[in-house]
Each structure stands twice: as structure tokens, then as C-alpha cells.
Image (cartoon, rainbow, N blue to C red):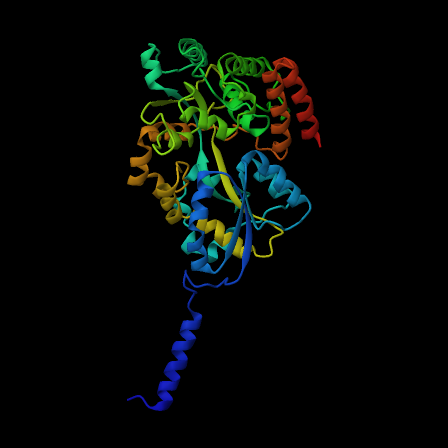
Length: 430
């Protein structure tokens, strides 16, 4: 029988036990904490923004998201990092910049934070190839927000109308672009690709570089663009765009290129696999069900690497953040399978990094038209498609200038790439 003394002892014991238990996943342990996040303009960002009220309700954390184009985000981050401003707690970028960020001490490992918030982190649910790119020296530095590869998209209806087979080679692409440009009196561009200076143009031209047997760096670690393979790749890329591309293509980034194709104003494009989600979305596309998806060609018989990309964009926690645990919790929550599954329903997000989302019925229903081609491209993706050395940003910028000069006709491919090699090697030597 319990007396008053026993009841008090039992109450105290229960209280001690409750205190010892780990906090519930939805307890607002960070109530009032504010973090600032810098993200790229992308379907994943749109989806995350829609779900922010859920995150605040769960954790108490206020999240202010700033969105900038991918072409601008690296320069912005480097400026903030180098000045130690602490302006952003979480930043997003391509994993090619990870080695430089780590060496410079700009970002912190996430392992300890993730161990404390296991309810939002399941390593086994990430696509292995995406997650593993974020591990350096055995430590996890980033969480993949979205991943993609590249493939060729072409108008099946136009190809059938004019008796063209699906393009399998770079020559097929050029011949089809010429035929369709002429047959439509240039009312439909034969081809569209990104031509904008910087990472936008370089990202697509890299498919030609690797496909023709070239690479950014040689076995000696030096810039290797002005090789016979690299020159031929740039000549082919600029020729097809100048002869059969749309007006203003030199200024086309991802969005401009995507919009032109999904509006039915181009017959062929080579771009990111995420574009398939827009092509097949009846709310924004006029070419639903009319698009075929095939691998990026390989011209070389002895390639140095694959001609399809393996691009992974991840969230990192700044070393200058005053709220690193809250920042890591946000990154884990934003990339968790629950949020990725929701993102498929709200936005054209085919770049999910969660196996649960990728294998879901919803994904298959929405993106079945290109899922097989996308997965094949990812599986064959080249992890060195863009350089991953510490000087990646300078190499991409220098290469982008060369591509733009060749496209504008202000320099030959050989001269433009030789100039880029010299600039790249100077950067690599520092």
C-alpha cells in the first residue's frame, strides 16, 4: 500500500526518468533560434519553402531563405566565407567545390550533429552515389539536396514527321538540328543548349569535351583543354549552336534553355535530367508525351571519362555560424525522405536524393516517361565531369570565357582554350 512518502518517492523517480529521456523529435528545443540559408533557384528550393511552416512548428527555428541563381551562388558564398561575415548559417552548392571549402575551413563536419538528430537523418535512404560525394577524409560535410545527370531530349513527333531516327551520335544531333531547322524555316530552332558564360555554358559543353575524348585536367594535373580532342569538341559545340540554335543562345542559362524547349520552340536539347520533369508537366509544357530521352553520345573510342554528368548539390553548415546545430538540423530535415516525398507532389522535382522518393509510386507516375533514361544517365555519370580540385571555381570561370569567345567568334577554339589553359595552370600553381 502506498503512503504519502512512497507516492512522493515514486513521483520523484518518474520525474527523474522523464528528465533522462531524450527530447521528443518534435519538441521545440530551439525555440526562438533564427538561421539564414542561401539556396539556388530550383524546384527543390521551391518545395522546401512551402514546407518551412512545418519545420518551425516542429523545432521552433525561424528560417530565412535567400534564393539566387546557380550562376551567382559560388561567388556570393566565397565573398561571405572569405570575409568571415557569418551571414549565412547554411549554404548550398555543387559538390565540386567541397574540397576547397573544407581546406579553407569554410564549412564544418556534420557527423556529431547528425548523431544527435537521428530522427531526421537516415544515411541508408540516400542514393549512395549522391551521399558519398559529400564524405571527405571519413567525415560528412554535406547533405545532398538534389542530384542529376544529363541526357539528350528530342521531339519524337518532329523526328517521326521528317523521317529521323533517335540521335545516337554528335553527328546525328548536328544533322537532325540542320534538317529540322531547314524544314521548319527556322520557326523551330534545330537545337538549343546553354551558352551563357560561366558554369552554365561549361556544364553543357563538358558533355562534348568528354564525349570527344578530352578532359579538363591531364594525368600530370595540369589543364588539358587545348588538345585536339578539346578543340574539336568546342568547334562542334559552337558550330551547331551558331548554325541551328536560337537567337540569343549565348545568353541562355538553364532556365532560358528549359523554357524554350518546353514551349515547343526547339527540336533538340542536351541538358540536365531534371528538365524531363518540366517537359512532362502539363501545367507548364506544350510538349508532354512528345519528347524522347537518349544518352549523351560518346564519340571517342578511348574516352577519359563518361560524357554524362553526375551533379550533386548539397547543403553545408558554415564554420562562422553561431547556430551550427540548428543549421545542421535544418539541412537534415530538408533532405529527409519525408520532405523529399512531399516535394514530388508540389514541384517538378525529379532530382530527389532519397531512395524512398525515387522508388515511390508517385515518382513513377509523374516521371515514368524519362525515369529509365534518367537512372541510366545517373548510373553512368562521370563524377569528374566538372573539375573537383580546390581551384574548381577559377578553372570553370576561365573555361567559360573560352567557350563564350568561341561561341561569339572573337577567338578560335584553339586560341581560346590555350588562353584558358594558361590561366588555369597559373591558378593550379598557386
